[in-house]
Image (tube, rainbow, N blue to C red):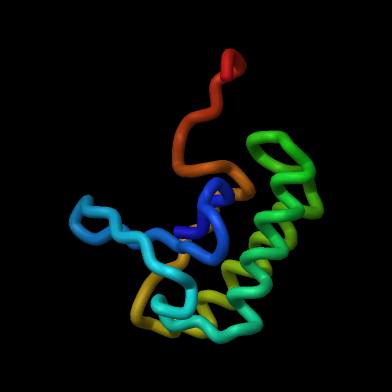
Length: 93
């Protein structure tokens, strides 16, 4: 998973309901992809909304695609449109 709220290049893995956090490099990505993750997270943080904006979503999707290309069929990359995770957004948040 590629959540926006993680620091640096950390990505999350979920297997049988258990989460594991690794750096992008440890997950099997290249240096360019790790840099793309940092850039996307910095941009999302500057926007400051829970779901980002059109630019952050587009960049996040491209970054997730880079991760998927790097890791191949070993994993399924999930991107949450700039949100911090697969949680339901509530107007009171």
